[in-house]
Image 1 (cartoon, rainbow, N blue to C red):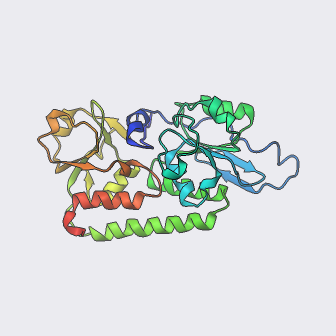
Image 2 (cartoon, rainbow, N blue to C red):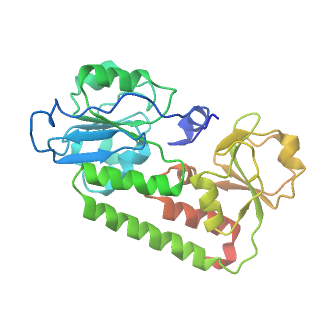
Image 3 (cartoon, rainbow, N blue to C red):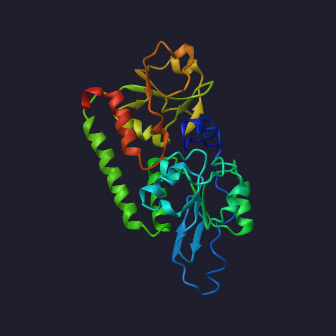
Length: 298
């Protein structure tokens, strides 16, 4: 069935959770026909669409259409390889880079003019024009799909391997695990409130069970009151369905509207950054935990 997922900043959120993801056909190209030419392939990785990327050397001109992936590249210390960004990449170190527009349906004319040797893209059926165009003109592309925490770990490993920074990537992941374990330990023996995580929209979109936000909520010491949603990731749910649940608190992203029928329930605003599936997962877990268990945090 269709699956949808928030992948970037708040202004992109409701656009992205309306996407229907799926595995595309067509292999991600490498550089020329390296294998048949008996040239040594330095980079050989399999992306999250199951395609194998083969390059003769680590890429030096990258455009990332996925803000979370962009953040991982910066955390790996490889920001100088980026030659373009999206409108949703707002880090100060990227301000001077030209934007190609959105992460989905970017301006392909602008993208191609930047002469990337690798494009990192969202995996899904909503934007097939981008990978088809890149295939046609021979620009390598790498698909990522960070639905769950393990997907995010795998995305980091893939990017680190592609940039020949495997050791740095593993160090980032070890740090992430320490941060998540710290949050788990801090609230291990605390009562677990029933929580609805509201993303916005009308009817409101909620966090479902097979998502990194659901997993962060559990790590932070809460229980997802909507864990039995029929949709595995994110879904619109009627306010009547929410109101009839036993809910202790509604977590709501900053700026998201809360339907009037739910405003009698305890509402807590969550910083927008928690929705980013990147290297900041540990801090996101801490932020959610502080809101649910303020007595357990300084």
